[in-house]
Image (cartoon, rainbow, N blue to C red; front, side, top):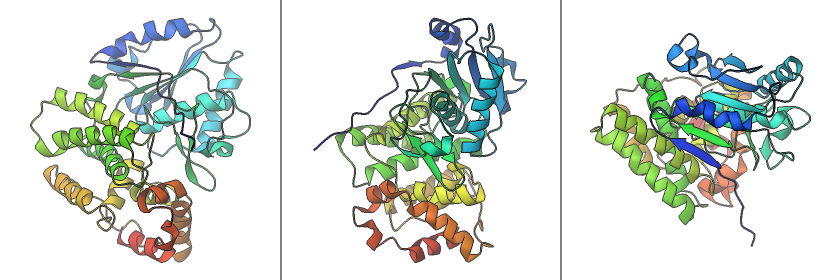
Length: 360
């Protein structure tokens, strides 16, 4: 039997205000004055000097604002890579992503595609990346996705929504500054926090579960309950703990996998462009048959925080559109195998998935 030899983030800083150490962290990694650092920043921070004024630009460094309104696409990665190559003679010293899961995934993908030939769509899958990425840094400004610690970058391509899962995907450096999450709107905070909660439920109830995944998953789940159910923490404590829950939730799937909610929300994301966090919530709300206890607690948390999920997403879809979503969902074989077992195809039929999608 051979065991997976997984990479982890090699360096991480945690602490309120640690964002101020970015210059000290980056400067030793600068190759030369013509090899820039490229900062990919969520455009929600444009004009927000509290964050942008602390980004240490020097020499030919470039700050690129990116909208996180849509999920990241393979075409978007290719355009960014082309722009960087055309604008700068030297290969960058590094890529720094500042934002939520969308921006972090883009930063990882761009860092990979600057050293690998072809288009980003050629690398959607497992272990297809051959050449190490350039130096890349992740700075989350919202907590829950686990993108800061995972070995995948989830992209919507021309014919599928699937991550670049590889040993070269994880960040070389992560800065966890809980202060950066202080202005996240409540609904967004909930949806993204639930992404972490759902990671835990899917990991802890999966057939891939082992002591490594379990230890991280249980800790993340405990933190989620403290934050979203007990409701007795100060804002600062919640920010600190949710950032650590996101980290642990991401780690819990390193040696395991996610499950039904993620597989089906990828279908929604691919066809309808539904954002990942809210998509997971919409799907998970209907998965009592797979995760009875997890869904029961989810509904309780929804009630506590006055969250109303959108309804009728699939109300006007035709058969061919349902087929597209089902194709995307069923192509994610490791997720189904983790959720159901090796013989998952015997119980997970197209009809069953269509019936579930119709409820959404």
